[in-house]
Length: 178
Image (cartoon, rainbow, N blue to C red; front, side, top):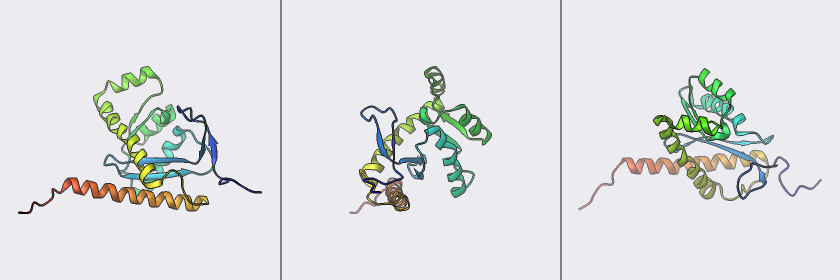
């Protein structure tokens, strides 16, 4: 059999404006408050709802970086679910997922702390755009899931080195000469 695409790629409909259907793999990106990508995960076997990806991401991050990681979770409405909220509470994680209900969302955003967290989360959308445009490119130029995962890992490392250099540059003022 001939494939014109990777056999593990999926076609999925997300309901986004301008994209009736998308083709490829889902990529979940989790970042720290400093802008470092602390989890990037290609979803290999299915098209998953965002809400189904949240708790496994927290488990991956905590397994790799320790239990003190992900003490606050800030997401858009796609990650919200009653089960996720209950699990986050049981884990002692501050839940700042935006509720799907418009009324509940308005009520939650009346809290200044949640409003501030979501103002910061807005930068995540830009971070994903920078990551895709400057580090991943418009497509992953490798064949096979293992190679694509490695490519994403290298892109994540490159991105994080770039962020760390910028953080250090902002922290240490340049020495003046003369």
